[in-house]
Image 1 (cartoon, rainbow, N blue to C red):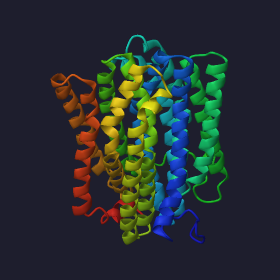
Image 2 (image 1 turned 120 degrees about the vertical axis):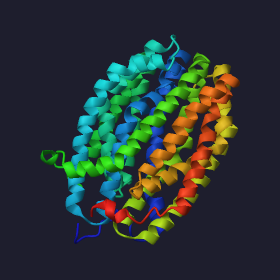
Image 3 (image 1 turned 180 degrees about the vertical axis):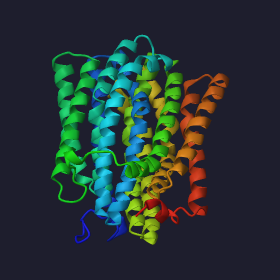
Length: 453
């Protein structure tokens, strides 16, 4: 790597072109990922019914609760790999890649065991309606039985994105998404199987995408190539990965726990509320696409440029990414606000389901710009090696304050809209805190000491 100039480096050339070129494939990748996830709900809702839709739709928060910690660790590893890649330190890149792969294998096995065992208890704790409880347990257990597939897929995509390659993950995800939809239609629409088949189709598709990513990494010419016999834990590299990733992992799990509390309050309003809010959550996933693609892009962009000591370039890229994300997110939010009744109807034509989904959307969508701002700042700070900052801010705002608000407010005003307001209120608070830190704190200096490069 020392004698060549990798095409995926984000440390040279036009800032806006590099960020956009990196972000666009991530956007479309996330789009297909969302289609991948939404296919289950659309097909189940139309071919099986509202009870089955509620069982599948309640899955998001529980799945993120279980996988969020491991995803955070992977995110931290991506920062480490991007930093060394930007610094052109090939030996450390290889060491980090193989250590992360070893971690992913161990995490996938652990998550499989934990997910299958604890799913029923968590669903009961969430107050899942009895009418959908058996289907929910079946869906989650099959989903978590395939944990190794989606853990390794996220690990491999993280490696590719950290070295600036966002195009190949897009191609693999398109193949996986088409496979998932085709299997859903085959199992459910043609063969008349239930929600378990939807989970099984998702698992098969995730393994397919993981295998495609691994194949690419094993054929790579550069130092991020995976050699099976070199997969092992390196103590020093794992320490760096944990140091960067543990705060993000804790943050993901705690936020997911808070959202499980939100979901448990929605469950109180019955099956149609669960189905309506679940349908909106799938639509919301599309609204979050510009947010997540720019946040991920900024983490890699900042990591590579700080690794290369391009401090001024890192600051300019941060401002550009924030601006693009909040504008795009707000435009998407306005679109969803206007068309939400028709969008929910695609999942379920039950008027009560449509009413609940519309109420939630028209409470939160105009505040998407705040969510975009918070996520972009969090991505910037992670890329700068300051992952404790977003962890503490989001732990306080999106967990402690969110749960406290719901616990108190719902007792005072016991309507479902009170639950929905938890999101824009806590997004606003985190945005203010992040803005103050971004403007006042020195979030770049001191990075070299953390990098170890």
